[in-house]
Image (cartoon, rainbow, N blue to C red):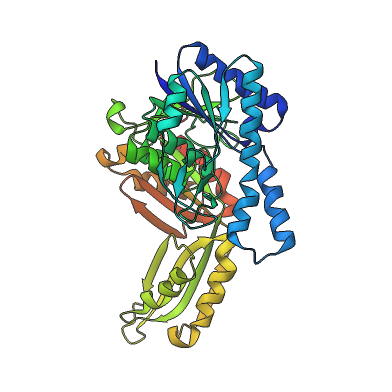
Length: 408
């Protein structure tokens, strides 16, 4: 009798009919003889409304009270789903975060899970009762409700699956799996049968919206097998597994993109030791995450100057520019420019480790389409480039074809 964790996202529980549909999916697993724990998100749009309530009262809100308000969406969904299961004749109850409890850090609004007490919930599961747990939340060492940050319900589900020793964690959403790229842009995109944790982590971190990055990290660290499935069809989904479970690795598994990038360039920066620390130190202190970085040193030894280009997220652009400009007298750069009309394109695959020429093929495919590359960054299984946003869709289609992902 396997133990399975099922997670239903906001679109999967958007209204009463969809909650009933989710309950029917849970019942199928129960009828198959499995023990089932369910993690739910708030109904679609509810969290945004709750955040608006908070900010309309006070933009400089107390994060502890913010968590009390925004965590209520998942609480409502968990109770409704438990009721829907009971209406189908399934023994079920909801468990709030403090009832397990799910222990987290005291970082309100962006807490991290530190541990989950499972003794009582396991007793109930072993007795045939379905446990319905609100995602996105926990309880701090100060005995107050915490939230895990947006998208945290995926992390809740994977952490619960790890704590319970579940056979797998099924993530139900509005897509039926992980695709080689965005099928809304590339009609020939294919659904993957399996993808490794590393590949999924890279795809999530560079723009793919299927799974939240932290949830993939937790799954990889604890060996939790994930399955991405659609709430609205019975098609087999995509398994996210250890590399050892995939016999023959594809050279490239997927192509992701992010429109959430902004580029900042500092021109005429003095070329001396410590200048990079002087730029990126204040940005780190301001909690601004810097992604891609490129430095061009002047060919003229008498100038001893360099141009420094880096990327931040669009929401952080204004703060990043202000932070760097405050350091103008110390950094002594000649000019600052920024550009919001850029997109990051990334090709990802563990097969890169055993294949040469991956980056060259990317550069060649973009060159043939007349697309200029502004910034390049690489990792062991990823190559990313920054290009003008107007070429995003053309680049995705060209690269999908160049790496042979169009074929059936």
